[in-house]
Amino acid sequence: MERISVPASGARSLDVWVAGPSEATPVVMHHGTPTSGLPYQPFVDEVTQRGLRWVSYSRPGYGDSSRQPGRLVADCAEDVAAILDHLNTDRFYTLGGSGGGPHALACAALLPERTIAATTVASVAPWTADGLDFLAGMGPENVEEFGAALAGQTELQPILERWADEYIDVTAEAVADSLGGLISDVDKAVLTG
Image 1 (cartoon, rainbow, N blue to C red):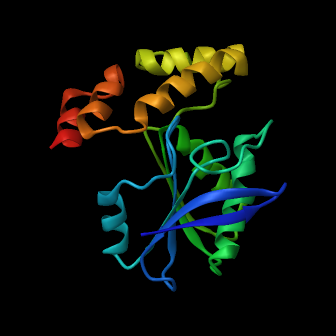
Image 2: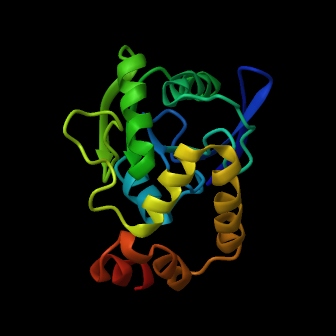
Image 3: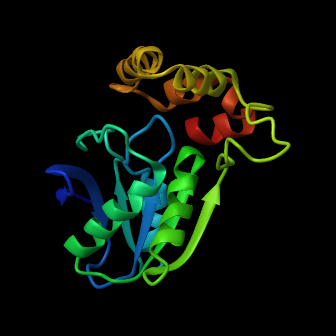
């Protein structure tokens, strides 16, 4: 696994992890919220064992990626294009989990000539979708985060900073506990072995 810094527009840099053969087609992973692009090794192994190249990155303001005030989900396409250009590759697969799902879909929509396929796992839906109660069925942690996000940065930032402090030296057991009502007991067992 190699960790690199990739230049991005606006004098920013992106925190990127890469594994697998340099000539292989990349699978660009979009992390959930509020985590970073730090890879989960079993996912990396599954990708590289299939002859593909793992690429994950921290979105602006996460990990060591520079902040991008006013960023929209769609802005990720430009960042992914910068990463692909830096890696000298044209085509890619993309995958987004949870809050990363919309980012994978944005790449597919905005980089159609480069995207081979896109998928999402446990992704969020559009906030404004007709007839959707966006928060229905979400765990209390998600409801807290989305509520704070709607209230603005002044409300959201302390929550994210508190969570960042909790994740600094995290263990598998602590991750399972921190996910609270977001995941089932079966999922917690997978995380902790």
